[in-house]
Length: 254
Image (cartoon, rainbow, N blue to C red; front, side, top):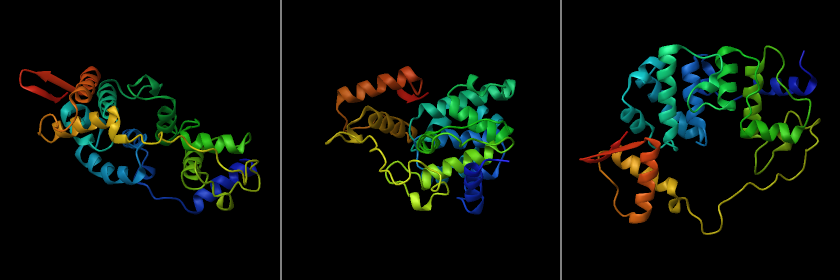
């Protein structure tokens, strides 16, 4: 039997949680797609793109057979385009060799994603620690861990608690199922890192990279209105990452 804190967390999750489509499947491919999409991307945006993606490429084999440029174009708007490339590469390996015992051997899959797919798809006893779960564990301290046979439910519950209640900016201790046992109850959360004053996302290299990929995906060529040095730096990085290629006709998606 789980201890009282874990039992309270699981009961809270069972009583009412967000009905997210990737929580309704045990398909490792569908779960991997959701996990890669959700990396530093808002749930609302992923909800818009997840269903259409799986309709277009419903299986590992379908995505593996797609052209890399198609995959990159379909990813535009989800951020960090190299994630799409790593997902495509991972699916090409799985389509040929099957799912490895150690999912971390696949391109782009780190400890968290491996543990999430392992517990949600393969029923493995693994703790999936993303930024939300880490916050919950850090604030609660020892004694909160997945019970045998219920890792998937525990991981989902801890993620939900961190995303909706034990948040970075404003912990809602009164709504927390662990409030009577949590040593951090009532403490002000540590301030999250913010951009320096005057720093804008539009001033970043990532923003330029995103504009280049979006323009190429739309067939518009290199976007205008960007300072030549910024554009050159972004294009050089995209070429190095294999996200775009250059030939005698100019630039195109890799």
